[in-house]
Structure formats: structure tokens, C-alpha cells
Image (cartoon, rainbow, N blue to C red; front, side):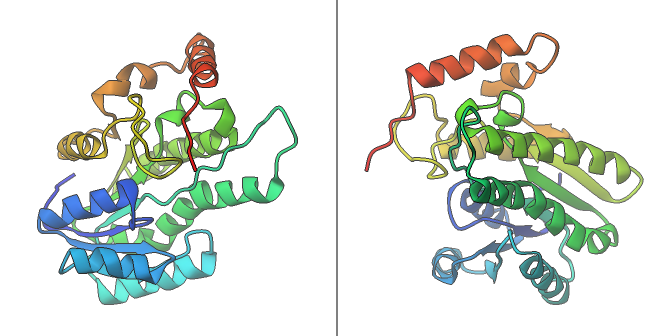
Length: 254
């Protein structure tokens, strides 16, 4: 995608990857609109980045999505980039009864949220000279983490949806790209110093560099082998990865 001259709306952008991407795009001179549920956090980010705008949005609420889309089209008629970043990652155990409320919240936030947000803006984006819909999925779409089975499945679903949408928009000005982050050192689960987690600044730098091209998927070099794993023999890596996570769990502290 073209990295300058855009009007960009980013969901879930008050912390972590979302905020870091918003600030990276902002530094390049784009008009960036961030979003989230908590106004104090939105104010904190916009105050730190003069010229950035903000809209309150609950990505799990269809009415909130429609209201945000209407405001975006009215207040930012040149909007041409949607970054679907918002997501949640509670743990679950598919070998035991699931908490249905939590499972529904994951699917609603991680899958239906970006699908609904894209749907609410799709006709507007098609009217732009050039536009991009960008999905933030996960490496876990390809090699699921068994202790986050519903989360992993939701990211596999958004990967599948992005491929279908990309094909259906092939004759329009709208490009569909997908970022599949590895484990990045943010507070999505727990921010610490685990050496397996990629530094956020390093991730953003490599991702922004690769976004400047025309790749349909933006995959940092560290996980290219994992991205290539799905296929008839994919179980070996999936099993080895999960066995390692059991033996060396994420160190969560109070």
C-alpha cells in the first residue's frame, strides 16, 4: 500500500500494536483516526500525537460500528484505509467445558467485529481512487495455540475471510492486505521480557517496510517458516509448538 497521503481509521488503537501502527502512520503525515471504548485512553493518545483524531467505538456492538462508520464518512470524506486491529485474547481449554460467554465475546470481537466494520465502510472505500482494508490476524491462524483455541480459530477465520474479500474486490480500487503478527511484546496477554516475544518497535519497523509493497500478506521474517507450515504434515509443528508452550509457559506475574 502507499504509506503516505492517506486518511486511516484504526480500530483498537489505544495500546500495543494498534497504537504503535497509528503513531507510525501519523509520523508519515497521514491523517489518522484512532478508536477504542475508553475516552481517557483516546485522549491520552491524541494529546501525545497532535493532529490525530479519535472516535469512541465498541467493536463488539453492531450499533456502535454503524454510528462510527457514519461519523467517519461525514467527518473524514477522504477516508481510504481501514485497519482492523481490535482483538482480545482470553485463555480457554478445549479439553474441558468452555465458558460460552467468553467464547462468544472472542468471536464477536475478533471475527464479526472486523467483518462488520469492513461492511459498514465498504461502499465508501470503493468510491475512493485507491483504498486498503488491512486485517491484523495472527501467526496463530496457521499454528494454533491450544490454550487459546477459540482465539486461534477466530484468527484463522479472519484470514479466510480476507482471502475471500480480496478476490471479490479484485476489480475495484480496494486492496485487501493482512498482517499476521508473531508473539509481540505487548499487553495483549502479558508484557514482559520473554525472549520468544518480538520487540514491538522491531515488529512495527519491519511491518511498515513490508507494507510499502504489494504483498497480500505481511509476514515478518521470523515467522516465515510458521506461515508455510499449513498442509498435510502440519501437525508436527503444531504439536511441537504446543508441547513447548506447556513446558515453558508464558511467565505471568501479579
